[in-house]
Length: 545
Image (tube, rainbow, N blue to C red; front, top):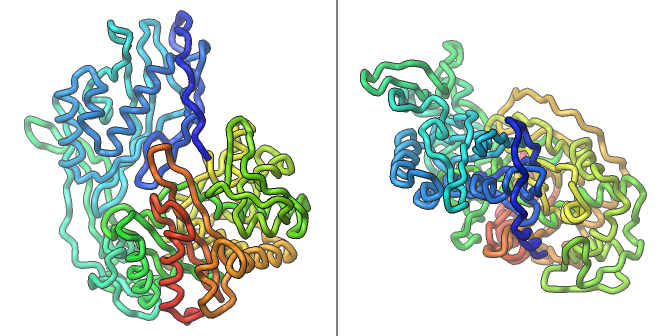
């Protein structure tokens, strides 16, 4: 697919009367690595009935630059570039903040004097400790030349940052964490680099992880005014010093770490979990240090999402595998959609559409589903969008109700505003082939507030057959030489006009489901395929208990 063209410059806004809240479609403006944003689906495409879109585009650009670490560019969008750059730099560096996530609120506020305020949520990952989340507001003001600038002030960074008070990070010395795999093998010795950033969080259950706090302090005296955020748990005397046993398997984790070497240095992530209970066997990221793409990334899942779309269609009896659903090269729904490499399969069956990942065929079936039905199926049967508690921080997916036919078309193929990550897609795969959702877990005893329904046996059988055919006759042929009855689905997800597509693959064999993503991998089979192949060729067909 190609992004929609940018909207033409709007006419000047009408006069304002007082202060009013103007609804805008909320969207994550800047997220940790892996986020996607489709032009034309932005939250600020407004006409005369709202704030000047140029102002709101400037707000969006400022937040995106700040989150991506492009601080000179972010500062240049303010009324005080020199000061802004210094403050933004010192704020993140001084507090060990890595890759802020900034999300605009759904409302923007206009005042009589023409000023505009955009509220936003800041999620600041403090290295080795956790995420500090707070709310702030972004003020904007129109300049004499008609351009909009962020009206710089310390309080936009954080409402309590001022000339008299600042923030300080305090870290508490704690003993090294003790964490083992499911068999009691230590995974805290550095042999599993993807786990190193997570050890503190895992060990925190026994009080053995790192602890610290973000303190608001008086600039003159250095005295603490208040604690803004606390991280880590105090040790329980009854369990202090005992290792925390995880669901991980050292053999699978080592194979997963090695498999990501197939990513060729690109950002990538991989998750393997048990189908029968959701226990995570391996969770790996490339690079290993820093952001946990595997469980917290926000990606368009591309055609791997066709597992969920197919489930929705099969549940409704809207299509059967042998039904003819033509696969043309192009299909226009507000914009032109096409298949990867411009392929086409005239007179194809739905089975062929699935195995060859035909975008246009799936989009042509959008009328078979109600507006919010895809998201409801994802939530009800696959747990996507519900709140998961797996033992470490996660992003649990989002499938918003499409705002128009173009977005509905995109959502059918895992684009638009559909968001997931390898943890979610490994779970989706496990649910599809077993019929039952199990909240994933990395540690035992986590709260499970999810509520789902089982998929009918007939739908499960059809999904398994479609995924198996994708390996034997479709885009996942790269796995065909491996032992076992493997089923899979590839995916290619567009990010933007100036970035290559992300590549995806999900697969299942025996009691294990796997999902991998490679940022800018171009195609799923070509980038994520070798990773999944490497993992499955290095481990037993079924994990031990």
